[in-house]
Length: 261
Image (cartoon, rainbow, N blue to C red; front, side, top):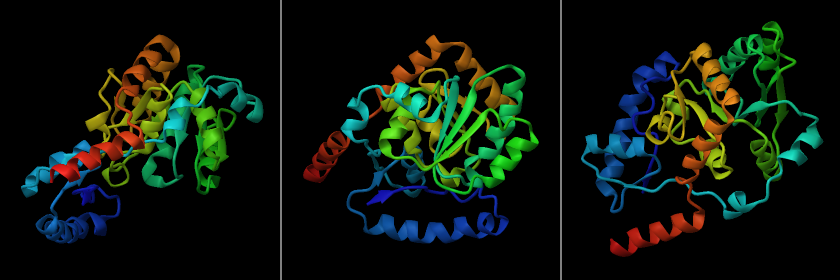
């Protein structure tokens, strides 16, 4: 059994969920632990927290398709298709309030003052609220909402980006963001908040940059740091690439675990 998001409701923004959710979640967790022969954890955070319940789980993260890693550079194709030729950082994911997109747009106001990079946002969801916020802050000319894109376009937009930004504000939504794996698979650094499983895999100034959640100025400073130091960005992305595993490698790992069991 794979365990994920262990004890992740204790910082949920909904007060009722924050109070009652952890008590509800512990009961099925303990029942699952009791019947599991092979406990597995998708994130290092879950592996650590499961030890509180007397469980030593095997860490087996999500993999990524080998073609996502091997596909040729396509950043120029993306720029030509969308007409975006400026430097930019990238957000990949659902447009959900717990993902911290509003914080990121507030950070763009500070970045604009410093003549920093643009922001490209891809992923499903209603962008109207965030477009309105960008206009209110006077940064709508620096924020590009592209909506849902196919995998080929996603590779291109990552390739052309300075960094991938993960500004989430809650443990609940970030067990282990696939955006981290996708960024590293293309040799890009990540700038991410210290929530959920993120600080268990992103090591500050080694394979990415970590910032506090809900802090637009700290987020802006991290973005400007990598925008102004391309060699550092390249180095962080290269180190991150070492932690990426294909699905073929993950399947082999699981088979070894099952056979030994």
